Amino acid sequence: MPVPLLIVDNHPATVEGLRHVLTSLGGFIVVATGRTSQDAIRLASEYPSAVMMMDLSVPGDTLGAVREISSKLSGIRVLVFTASGGVEHAVKALEAGARGYISKSSMMDEVAAGAKAVASGETYVSQDFGVGVITALRNASVRKIAAQALKLSAREDQIVALLVQGKTNKEIASHLRIAERTVKGYMTELMHKLKARNRVEAVIAAQNLTWSADTTLLPPHLVSRASPSKGQPDTTHYAVHPMLPAMRRLS
Image (cartoon, rainbow, N blue to C red; front, side):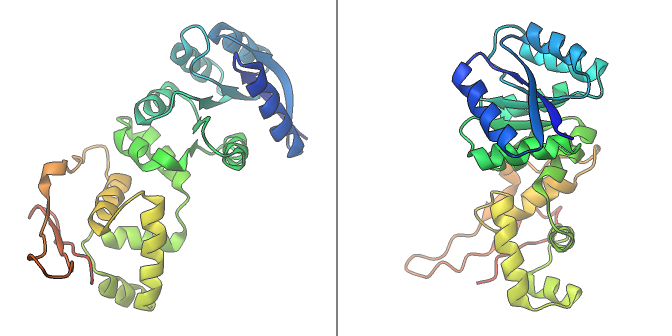
């Protein structure tokens, strides 16, 4: 049975584009559309088990509408689909109760994936700023839910746990009884998912995914980088503040 879909957006072309893409998947049926935050509240009460795709830029208090809908109608799953991109907007939407956040600059296949995820009860955040959103979330329970949107595999979860202990690739390979080159392959994929440029950023991002409500986020000034000597190849080793395990990038 198709999932009822509500679209709240004041751009007719966007509404029709979403209608075409999502109904063509076979799993959705657009039952109503709106143009304002008040429309969103009204439609939510009329279709209390629908997925609602909502643009934050429609007239009215959109975040207030998301908050009211999410608190009063638990069956509604709000997926924010908006040009108001960036971590700050996404954090506010998720903490207001939205179950997903996708930028209008995303490819349509990601939009479809996000709609499917939210429809099935999951949380979805655009990969472009997923880790930044998770790090910035103040609500621990929301942060835990949002972290699931990264969809790490069981093996990647194991590697993340070892990363935050300061383990090297060789040590991780030994612990998991797999080849070191296999670990390097997982690290490449993890760095892509975590939007990390190097091993230290990957470790810090991994810590942010696993910190509990009473854990303090590592501030940037605690990270140091040992630069190579002039004229020498970059075989840089990285280290963090002594209160955490030493971490290094294998050359």
